[in-house]
Image 1 (cartoon, one colour):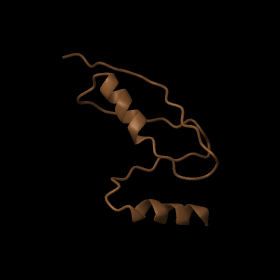
Image 2 (cartoon, rainbow, N blue to C red):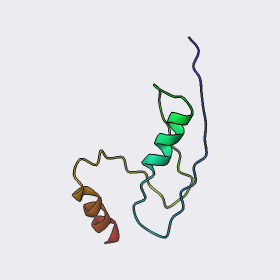
Image 3 (cartoon, rainbow, N blue to C red):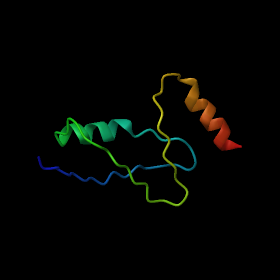
Length: 71
């Protein structure tokens, strides 16, 4: 069994500090690439950026994170 690889560069426009959702563009790329099972690795090439992964089960979580980061 051979392992296939696919790469893509996704640029997220930002307007300063905050939380930016980019689930939909990633989901579209995965679907367009025909990927059904695999491992997704995300690299953020910016010194002041962080990646937060959450399941969004509670809509208050995003507001809580915004308040913590704005302190």
